[in-house]
Length: 235
Image 1 (cartoon, one colour):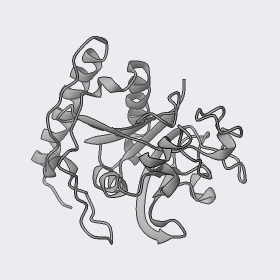
Image 2 (cartoon, rainbow, N blue to C red; image 1 turned 90 degrees about the vertical axis):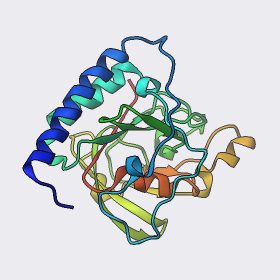
Image 3 (cartoon, rainbow, N blue to C red; image 1 turned 180 degrees about the vertical axis):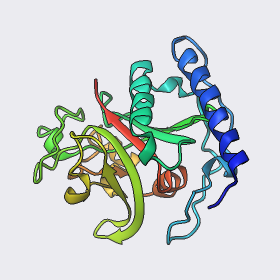
Image 4 (cartoon, helix red, strand yellow; image 1 turned 120 degrees about the vertical axis):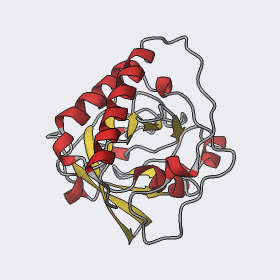
């Protein structure tokens, strides 16, 4: 995708303006969530993956970024500032709140220009929750740990592997810089489907990857695209 200097400058001003507005809004916990519907423009991938074009179900709705804890959102924005030179596209980010149970939608996708957001279920690694409680107990960056890692991830290229359609991630912090070597990616899995909650009450566990429901993968790919940031943390 190409764009001229004026478009880039306008985009930066819009993101800065809305970032300030969002930061202020997050300080008001009692504010009512927005319910404006997502549009195709909101979800258009920066680079089309080598799969059929992503489609967003009609019932998918946007909510306010106030669904993200204010302190976690501030940490995510600080990470974007820190790693800004490596992040090609700063119009949208994803924030994973690992303080929440896997039974809760905790994979938050935020449009920093419009202020809209939406949330999906996502699994954590078995090494982060050995007793399968549904809550992440610890992070690890170690090979063979099967644990989720904390920090800022840069979304990379799409590929088809043992988990089907997947997206590579680059760890940008000392706490997750083994992500590429550990094959920590975004992929879909049956154990991350909403239906699983009816049985055990929590999702299954991955080997450290961000595993989402099989019906949610196209939405995730459309929201992320290569060159954007995922920020994962608990505290």
